[in-house]
Image (cartoon, rainbow, N blue to C red; front, side, top):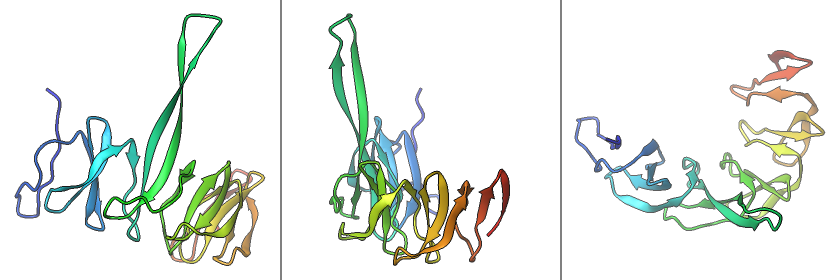
Length: 195
């Protein structure tokens, strides 16, 4: 027998039927739920408010969630009897009504402090909630803004920029953990320390 998940409130009342294979925590009043391999969102009354049609979802932050659909292309070899399927991911942001509010991207991170890092053509930049590029697509990798700074990578080294795209901390770190209370743990020359 396959297990199914539901939610209860703080009084023990079941708020949704036992329908879901996986579930995430509630964030901004909605929780991601997975049924038959597809993800959607329920509200705190247990109602499915965004249909289970995505291959992956993120939590809602600042009113938006990232969602992904994996597309498959079929490749048939003419030299042998096999079929190969190649997949690629398409990511968007949706609002709480389920409306797609952004262009399609190869990769995305959540909105924080009004901006979200997104990847197009293998290059990262930052967009606002209107899908307008605010920080140009020029980074090898990017993380979300926190406490006014975002980690960005160029030539395998991480540094930190502010929202005006000014480099505040130079590209000299091999890895990092995001800022918390104005501190970040960083890796340099195989040693961890605080910046």
